[in-house]
Image (tube, rainbow, N blue to C red; front, side, top):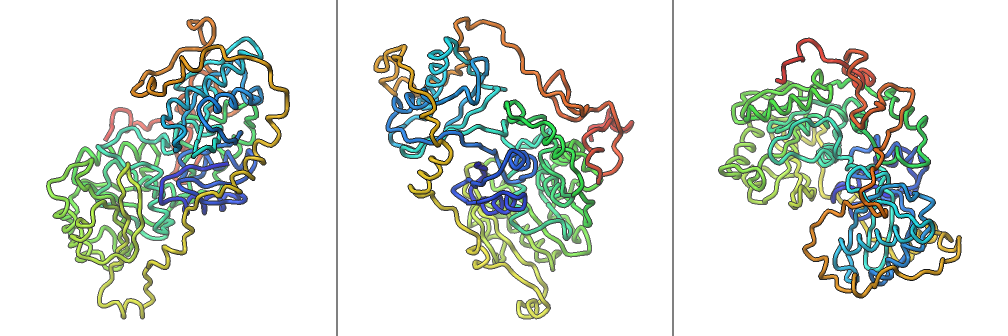
Length: 511
C-alpha cells in the first residue's frame, strides 16, 4: 500500500505507520510504502495525521505510449474490482515524456475500462466525477504505470471539523506534520500567537488527547468496496481506549477578531473548546508569556504571499523582539518563506526543515530561547537540535528498476494470464480520435456523461452502509454525528464527541 503526503513529512508518516503496526515501511518522494491487511488500511485512514490519502495498488506494468496504455488497461481483469453498474473516477499523476498530458492518459485509461466491459458484457460503466463508487489513481513515471484504488476518497486533510476558514488557511495534514516534526506530544504548554482559523491549535489538541483525526469525516471510499469489513471498521472507529485528557494548556491568539471568531467556531465543531483557549490580541501587545511554565510556540506568520501584510520583515522583527523579551526557556518553531524575513527575527535557528506549503518552498525553523549564555544553558541540562538531528532522518529515495519490477510481479502477478485475450477490434479509429494529443490541450470539459447506451438513464443514488451503530445515517452521506442522542459530557470521551446535541447556550450563539 502507499500513503501519500507532503514533501518534508515522509519521515513523520513513516513513524506513524510503524507505530500502527505496518510492515516493510519505506519512504519515497512524498510517499511512504507499507504492507498490511484490510485492518491496517482502515487504521491508516483513521489514525494517520500526516497522510493525504491511502492507495492500494492493484496493477503495475510498463506502457510505451497512450495506445499501449489503452491496450493493457483493456486486457486487465476489471471484474475483480467493479461491475458494469459501478460508477468510477480517475485521477492521474504523470511524469513522463511519453505521456506529455495527464488528461490524455486519463482518457485512455477510461476508454480501456469501458471498452473492456463492452467487449465482455455489452454494457459500459459510467464515469462520475464526484462520489464515484470506485476511485482509481493512476501514476505514470517514465514508462512505469501503477493503477491503485484510492481508499480514502476525499483527501485526509479534509478532517471534517472545519466549518469556516480565514484567508489562506493552513492545510490540516501540514499543520499536524509540523507539530509532530517538533517532537511535541502534549508534554508542555502549546502557544500559537497568530492562530488564524485555529488549525495548529486543533491539531495540537488532537495530538495531546490522542484523538484519531479520522473520526470527524463523513465517510471513506473503502466503505463502498465489495470486501468492506464493517465489523472491523466499526470496532476501530469506536475504540477510544487510548484517549487521554491533555495535561498542559493549549492557547491561541490573533490580532484579527474575525479570525478569532472563525477559530472558535472550528474548535467548537471539533468539540475541543474545553481544551483550547483563544483570545483576540496582537502578539506585540503581550506583556508576559501566556503561562508561567515554559512551553513551545508553533506559528505561521503571514509573509505577504497569499495573506498580505504591510511589511513582513517588520512583523518578523517584532516576533523576534517578543520572543527574546518574554519567552525565556521556550522553544519557538516558525514557518516562513523568505530568508530575509527570518533574518529580521534576530535569532540563530538551531534546526531548519524544508516544508512545501501550498506550492511555496518554505522553511520551518526552531529557535531555542534561553536566559544567559549557551554554556550555562548546556550545563543546566538544556539541549538543542542541530543539523545532525536532521541528517538522521531517512531521506526520500527513488525506487530502483529492480525494486519496481519486483513489486510489479508481486502485485500484478499472473493476473494478465488468467483468461485469454478476447479477440476484438477498437470500436473507433485511434488515429482519427486519439492520434493528436493537441486535441486535449486546453480541454477543460468535465466528462460527466455516462457511457451506457442510454446516457440519460436515471442513476440510483449510492446507499451508504447501515450498521447497527446509529451514527450511520441511512438517508445521506452526512457526518456520522447524530445530534439526537446523548449530550456532550467531557472532552476526554470519544463517544460523547461523536454523538452530541447542542447545549442551550449554543442554539443561537456562533461566537
